[in-house]
Length: 598
Ligand code: FEO
Ligand code: CA
Ligand code: CA
Ligand code: CA
Image (tube, rainbow, N blue to C red; front, side, top):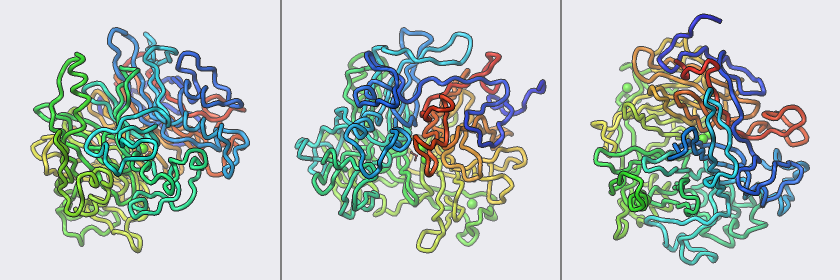
């Protein structure tokens, strides 16, 4: 090879070409290892993975299924080790169990699936010479949280009648977390996890609110309601009101009870990312991943305490219970007639405009106040989508990750796609969602007024319109398109130590597998997007983390292809021919030991 690849600092690698190989393809000169995969034992006493003899007890001590969000936290007193926290979003029974009959799941299969959901915390050890990471099994911080782990509901809706069930008349204790998609890490050392498509676990929805949240009127696909009546709304109407929150988890305390923070609202939380105001209060951004739904911001009223004392840690665990929840309304600055849905730029040369954060409700120690006419505060926090509807929030093209740059304060709002935009009966393109039949998605760049995290106004512009660069509707912050990689369906994002934005994709519509991309957001290479890796067959790229010496990704749902099963696999990654596909975490590093993209 010889010639050093050009690019912004941190992005100097030869881009990986689009492909459909059943493997993780990385740039020339890079190496990889599988860090941990579905079924790997992580807790003391957990057995080795045996796909033909799965039990709930085994799974509860093993790494769960469908890893999505990842956090890597430093470990005090243990150099060369980090604490990996992973979401296990959902189960794919037909790829997990040989001979699975979707009409008649067994109790055993259902209980394995409960144990395969949730979170994992697992300590990983860094190789001294490379970027390789390996699991430290049986470490005292290793932990599994599942669909049956006890959680506490906290904040303004906790204890409300809307959250009471026959198993929990207090409305404050709930079993499990479901469909944890993306998340974030807090400056006080905890992790946040968005409960996303929780609707799919609940049967027999009947109320208008069920419908607004996508809860179906019949049986569920997994049929859990046959095994636990809490999943049947006809028998336990409020259980579904106890899912759809942001979970806060303290991975440093293995005995801690995870919390669901009702002050951040209830919707299909893609994730939750945190920054601090100048005076140290938390601000959390979160998208509602649904076509024509909204994105939100929570501004806390209490300041973070620094340090690791017990008192500071306890105080900080109350930060997300008091504050104001806002929803975003965006207004374009170009005449509506110039936004024709084709992606053609308006006369002022940019899809851009202004926005406001509309307050929905405020939670205080003394109680909560609604800012939405006709809704109580409790209703706002439990039926947050309806509050957004009432105040005229802007309907977006499926808000996924929303991530503030720690380098500039600008906030990136990832909109994965919306094929219904502009169709008969649906909203047409607007300046913030400028393409009809938006198959490939786009990314907004949002600047809080005065770069203050708690501002109630902001400016925004479209940073990237995804697709094949040969497609005239695409846009890469004005960078020449002949020099960028094709990208489709951006989903999760992360920043590297240089401030570049890394984007993972879910559902590539260009004929290639999903992948991970890096793009400069400032300087004269702003918009130069380069593909860093591609996924195995059927997999979505999740949880990217970019450290100086390694990139870590979650390979979610390898082999998830229509018609595939254990008997007819579409992928055999990562274990190879004859083995079933297994969702896994992968680390990537430079063979010569130098920094990523240096
Ligand atoms: Fe689970 Fe919105 O992706
Ligand atoms: Ca404009
Ligand atoms: Ca996602
Ligand atoms: Ca997605």
